[in-house]
Length: 81
Image 1 (tube, rainbow, N blue to C red):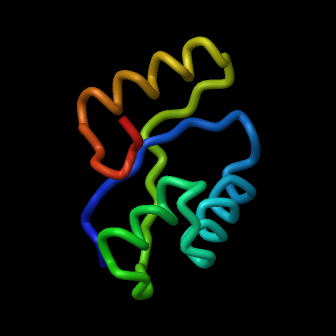
Image 2: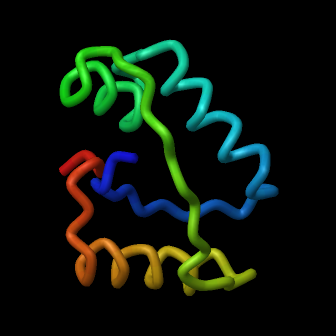
């Protein structure tokens, strides 16, 4: 399993957002951060992923602030900078 991290927020159902990320991984597309990561770091090889919920927040402004906090705290290398 790849140990590199990605942090993102969504106000949509998590299962839908995860499916979108997994589709990006499957297609190895550079249109998504995870697809680009698979293409560049794993030469297209299969990559297992794990998902963790870092926080829950229904308010979009507070959710964006939490996302910025976690990106700063974890410095995930898959996130586009």
